Each structure stands twice: as structure tokens, then as C-alpha cells.
Image (cartoon, rainbow over all chains, first blue to last red; front, side):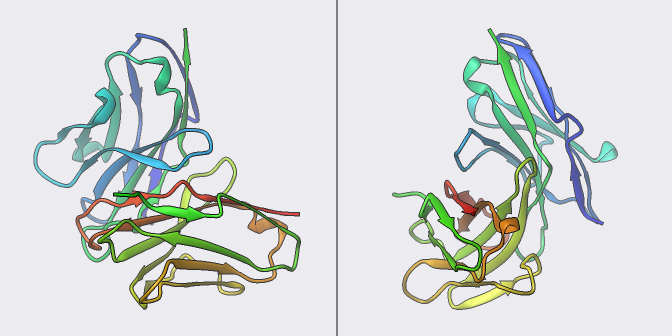
Length: 115
Length: 114
């Protein structure tokens, strides 16, 4: 079955520290891959996406993610976290045929940033 | 260029009433997706529509829920005879095409059933 796993429900990091949020997926073929961020009471904002090509993708707000086919992973990273990065982060996959945006989401990782 | 507009942002309904959630896609977008987010969970796909057509409703509950995207006007997600378990945030997303293009999300409608 198709699924997305985000093993970390909550993560707390200090401001200025590096960040890595994990995402593993189970899918029949290589899907499209996405990371979204959701601030409290808000909608989802796309941070970055992988469709094809270079497996290291750059996104907005200084985020990057690396697609590793052998590990079925698409981990999100940021070298130095800012207090404004505190939010919930969702990894998602979409199919290459038909509707890309019929997305399967992980359950999210809630990021807290300590001063 | 306005983003995806959802209204109302908050909706309170008593058990047994009907809830109508509206979604106006971004200009030039003809593909609309509805997702539901239950507390402590990620978003779950409900339905995918193009203008006047339901393309995929595999995530829709079999009863009480329906969706439309008419030729003119917003997409509507309709929940009849709401129950407490329908309380959730409902998000709409739109895209220019179905495959290979980015979807943009609205800010959601938070439905509370009392």
C-alpha cells in the first residue's frame, strides 16, 4: 500500500542549530515528492518538490531535501534554524500518472525552536 | 493574483445540519482537490474535480458527502446531516493541470459540529 512515514512527531531544536526531518515512503514507482509547512491555523505552503533530475533539491526559506531512491527517503534539512521556522512540516507523495496532486501525506512533524 | 480562497474560515453546525464549504481556485486553475485534516493527523485526500467533472472521489465517505465544481462559480464540498466526527479542517487545493504541476492550498475551513 502507498504510504508516507514521518517517524518524528515532535522535534525541538535550538535556534541556529541544524535540522533534519525524516520522511520515508512506500510507493509502487518513483513518485513526485513534496515538503509542505503549516503554521498554526493556516494552510499549507510548499517548501520544495522533487519531480526528476538532481536528487538534491533546494527550496524556499533555506530548506533543502535529498531524494534517496535506495532508502525510499526524502529528508528535509536546514543548516541553521530560525525561530520563525517553528511550525508543522508535512512530507507528501503524488503519482506520476494522472493527478499528481492526489497527494498522500505523512502525519507531520511538529518543530519547536528554542531560543 | 489572489491565491486559493476558501470560505468560510470557520463554520459551526449542530448535529444533523448541512455544511457547505466553498473553494475558489486560483485564476487559470481548472483542477481542484479537497482534503480533510483531522486533529493530530495529516491531510487525507477526499476528491479531485475538474470543471463540471468528478475525476476521482476515492477518498470521499460513501454517504452524506458530495462535491461539485460547476462551470461558473466555486467548488462546493457539501456535508449533509453532520455528525461530531465530521469536525475537522477541510482544505482545498488547485492546480493548472492534473499531472506534473504544483498545487496551491487555501487556508482551510475549520468545521466544528456541536
